[in-house]
Length: 174
Ligand SMILES: [Zn+2]
Image (tube, rainbow, N blue to C red):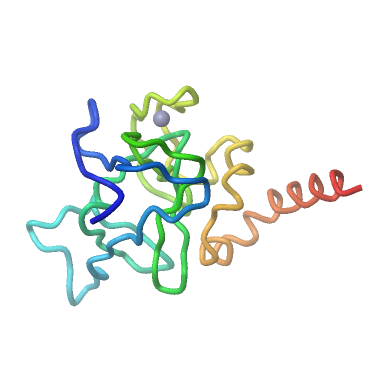
């Protein structure tokens, strides 16, 4: 493990922290996917369902240190799909010692709502349980970060946001 370390994140268990600065767009690390959870190979008693997530119809169990990646309503990182690999990428410049966070609702079309304690200035408090329940400005901001499979699976629900973004773009082009 290079570039990040796992330590206590005040008030919410362990987190992942940058050990050196990362530039915007820089890959922080390749996410450690332990395995796919299937009917044949279900989660064992020692495995935590909170460490697994749905990705393109597959339920993937995340290993160390990435299982400690915390949520933020104003995340400094996101995941980028590259074939079967998943990269953790800086969404803005990250300083040494800063906690690396993602927004759990990106690429998430349905889960449990929870009380967020991310302490970011734009914390949503009680979070939505799906990308589609996010305020529209968040949906538009996150749209470019969505995974190809999420765009494909939810193309019709995303059509309105896509059109609005394209309309904005053509306005600035002219
Ligand atoms: Zn929050």
